[in-house]
Length: 438
Image 1 (cartoon, rainbow, N blue to C red):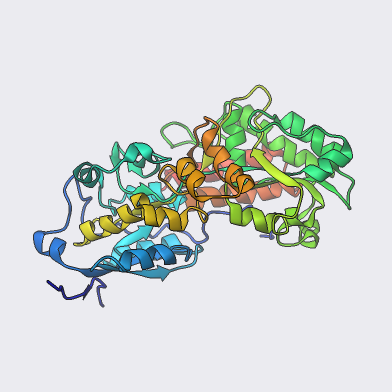
Image 2 (image 1 turned 90 degrees about the vertical axis):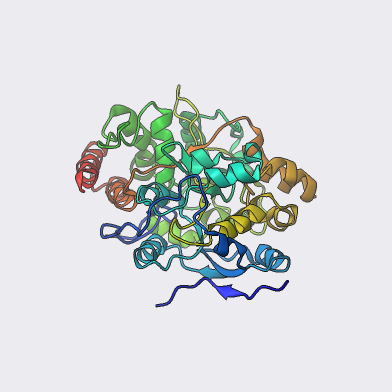
């Protein structure tokens, strides 16, 4: 029996190192909680809504899901329409939609802002849906209760395997300098520092670029420190452990001179590693498309490893997995969940996405079935088959403001306008003030 297709739309300071960025610009200070409470273990949809075929809106900042949408729409009465919104300002737009009751039915949520949003009870809880459908959550690269969880409940499903920034290195420059290549998982920052200084011959060849701010989180934790206290009420980056993590970058820029300044980076181009004039940079592990852009369409003699650990430190790698979530107050929870389940567990969807993104379900196993190039296969899957667990990148409950304060002082430190001690003390003062705000 045909069903009428019903729309679910409701009426009504100085530029610095490329890649060093706050996850999204714009303050979230005025954000409001959405009407309605969390969905609990039961679906929010009533019986009539569950029987309806609707047109769902799916909001994302990147249009990489077209093939999956075509597959889903071609085999379901319920249809899904894409609503693309830029990364910058994305979270603010979502908050405005929640406040106005106009949030799309399926949301690709920016990982840095998920902790702040989930505390506002804007997402439907999906534990009951997972149990009802018996989906294989054990096969996911990341657990919903870790990557989309709050207080023991899941409020979404990871959209991809969580991958951190790793170390891209130019094999040609290593070999020409007679430097031993990095080990994949246990290379240290002291070894990276020595290699960068041996490779560098500025201004023609640079040893390394200073990393983006999330890498400093890894180094701080590798050295036994932490960004925030356990209760997330105090910033701790003026500890000795944290300050030691910043010292390498300060030395490369201001003392040794083996890292390019912002102006020198501009001369190297938008993708500085692709210039073939720098030994090491931070890059996203497992992302084959980005790797092509970084290596002159895969022509360079280069590869990647996990980012080095602090000397005597432990391996800590933070990553982001942007979850798919459902608004708590939509009557179309079941339809939205059906589309999310299709994306995550359906083999056709897996086939469509496997070369675009580290899919969340049995990534290494599925990649081995569908990726023919052995070099590409190893590049994509090695981070997930090395036996190392990634942890969520976390900036507290006010990620925009905390990252902005962190980055502002980091810039001053790397420009030589503040010492490490002054900059980290200022970070602590600024971030503590942010955390104390209601």
